[in-house]
Structure formats: C-alpha cells, structure tokens
Image (cartoon, rainbow, N blue to C red):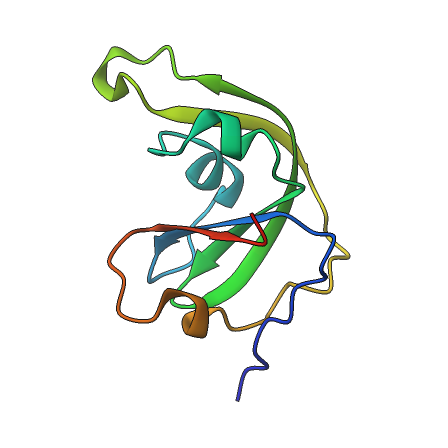
Length: 109
C-alpha cells in the first residue's frame, strides 16, 4: 500500500501525470508541453512526475519557457534538476486528483 502525499506548507507543487507505465527518461516526459499558467508555474518549487498515481520522480524547476516546438504552440516546458532524495518519491497523489482528467494539478498554489 502506498502512503499518501503530505506536502509541506512551504512547497509549491505541480504534479504532472506522464502515463500509467514508467518509461525511460521521465525528465523529458515531465518537463515538456504542458498547458499551464506560466505565471503560476514560475512559482513552483517542485514538479512531480506521476505514473499511475504515484510520484516516480521530483524535479526542482529552474526556468519556465514557452515551447519552441510549433506542434505544441502555447504550451510550456521547464528546465530543472532532479531531486533524487525527495521525500515525495513513492507517495500516492490520487486524492489530489479525485476524478479530474486534467494531467496537471497544482498543490499549495
């Protein structure tokens, strides 16, 4: 059984669902082509990569930009570093999503 995510009050988190199966290069899957509010996203202290409701990786975003890929015009991406020692890894975030189909979820923002 997975333990539910309990975010720290000071952490501003964006969760992004990247699929139901963990794949190679979670960073690239997590960082690109999201329909997020740039002003809001730029305040995030953590971006959590969610696979089947579980935090598989945590990134500390350093910079947010609009993507230059014309196929995803208007979408955002970030450049960041992985936090391999994060307490959030392995935690269940299903309660934050409820029945929402949106792959992006803001926590403490």
